[in-house]
Image (tube, rainbow, N blue to C red; front, side, top):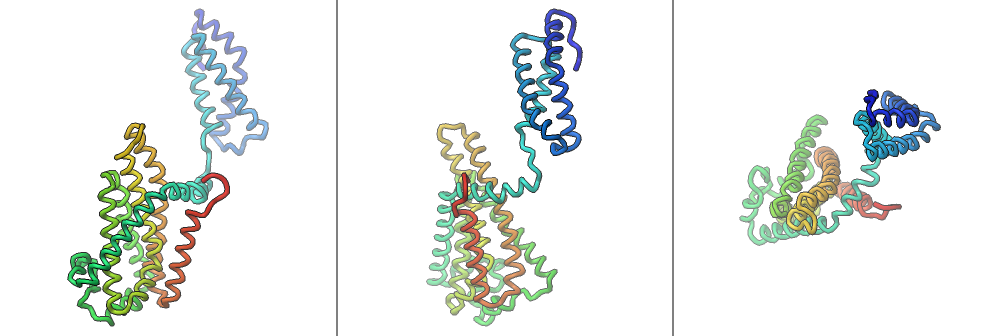
Length: 337
């Protein structure tokens, strides 16, 4: 610490420092020790002393400012107080603790807080499914409009029933590396859709709603096509072995986008930027989990669906994943969520 000048304020600073400097030096030494090594290296007595020493520095800083002591002393105390604050009150969680906190509380709490937006997102997706199903059921020409050729991959009204059935049970025969590559592609594709549904929410929710409806239309059209050949049940098992997780992730991404868009449109009595920042915290936490869900969905779609051919097994996995996700996000937990 720089010695204060020998004027009036400097003399007061010298006396002030002489009375309290031992505590400041002790706090500085403990902080140096903790920062160079780890907090766990401090003894129990040292850990108990830290808050008291920090409060002593805060008190000294308050006196120094109110009595206009020299600027060098005040600057020293401010720096020491800042270091002490981050040690005493700052988060010092290790990555395992942060990860545990995310899965045990932050993620399910964020999703639970989006329940209204989730209902809206799921409803729009379901309306799209029903619309696609009804349109194609009544007029097969709608199928080509809803499902372009690159998406249909030969699954269209002109395909034979045998071909459509073969996709459900014989498609993507590949080795382990091929399945892994397929899963990676699916994850990338689905992640892009989910991120778009979230990112476009700021535009008054409309692009997010349209994207959800478009995805629903495609699913409904596919169900109508297979249903017309008596393959609706096998198709459902083929889809939902991964689709439960994938569609739930898409719905949550849409819900996060709606939260952002709603804050833009209706900030309430807050500034729009403040409302957007608050909405972004909860929506961003939910979206971090959505990416993890899409990884799971990509593995189920690219690997498990191709290796598991029995309808009952596919339906069982779909039921188990649905139950697990619903329980994880919505079952009451002890304490606040």
